Image (cartoon, rainbow, N blue to C red):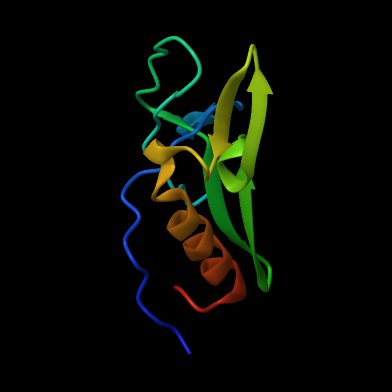
Length: 109
């Protein structure tokens, strides 16, 4: 049974790799709105950190960034640093991850 996705118009990423559409010509691409939280400003126009595809009878999701799917916290120089879903600017990440899982399971088309 398919159901509509709950909107997650952006996700915040902290690390990872990016790819271009040209490098993945056969994939159905899912662009992620990028906010590079812990790096200097890097032009990300046209770059992707994730892609999805129907493959055979299944589905595949590939991401070049894992921190956005985690909830991390560490102390450095007596300062608490939040990563992943713990970051205040990453409030949409849990819904985005849930949408990916629902798409992979077939709940979303």
